[in-house]
Length: 253
Image 1 (cartoon, one colour):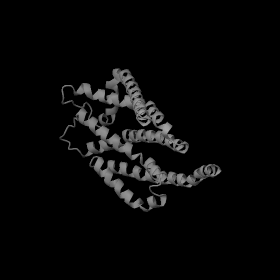
Image 2 (cartoon, rainbow, N blue to C red):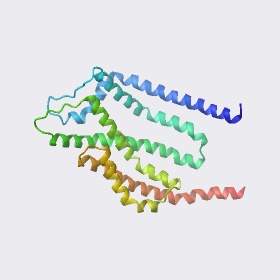
Image 3 (spheres, rainbow, N blue to C red):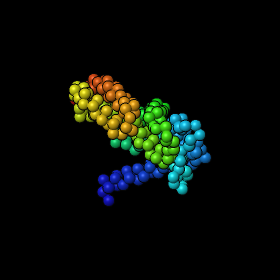
Image 4 (spheres, helix red, strand yellow):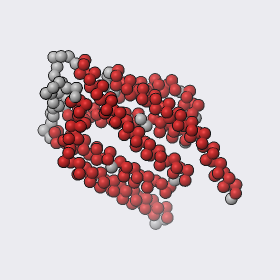
């Protein structure tokens, strides 16, 4: 067996071990949270329940749905709670193959991406859900008694969490594009108007068909794009200063 094959196999073994550790940690967190699975789902359903008429509850159309839906939510919470450990395992796997300047950039990038995604989910839960559900309840005919299905509600919540979580990653995407030299800050400023139009188009596609939720997704996307431009400008200015010592070291050699 050649050295390259041995190295490749050793990387696969290390990846397997780290993935196994992640699964074990998430599993332990899941088992610890299982006794409170019903409470966790009630917390997730609170924005909807607050807008329903008094005495109205959600329904479950499937036989085992009342059991499996809270389990799915608990598993999601267990993964989010274990995210720092999962990210550390990811970082520990890729860090040996990075240069020093790449490590300085990659680690804050991973941490910032995770925090921004969680911030997007929190923004969606605490601000968007209440506004959207109140709007839907206000325009619903008085002759209808809403009784949302818990499985459909979970699918809707997951879609919205994903949409807002990804939206809050816009500054990271801008930074990566500039840092990798794929596009300049000046070019990103030129296409600002297209980005604004694209933000509202994306919001219209992924959110419910109401203007409120579309605006609440599109505006943060535009604001985060501007924040990304500001941060990318700092990265673009600091790049020559970082490269100078490396060139000096090469000339000394």
